[in-house]
Length: 75
Image (tube, rainbow, N blue to C red; front, side):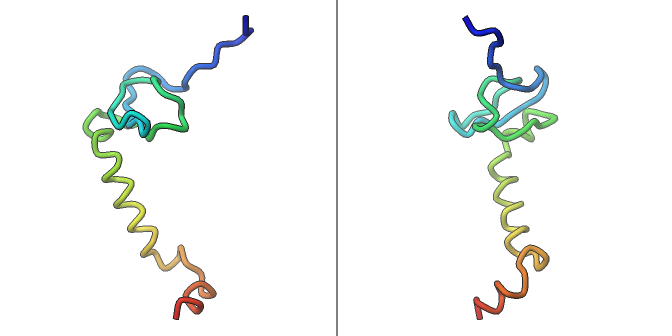
């Protein structure tokens, strides 16, 4: 018998979006590697994929994200 049980980290009342099951979950139901969060509300967790897409677009278009050597190669 293992000395310590491996459990997901988090607290009930926190909301997560599970990437494996593609659904919103309250509390730590799935491993951290398979989820986004925590979010303060269920509604925020429901929009996790949309939020991730928006942030990715912002980062891709952020001039500070790309250094000058990368831009010179793209030309």
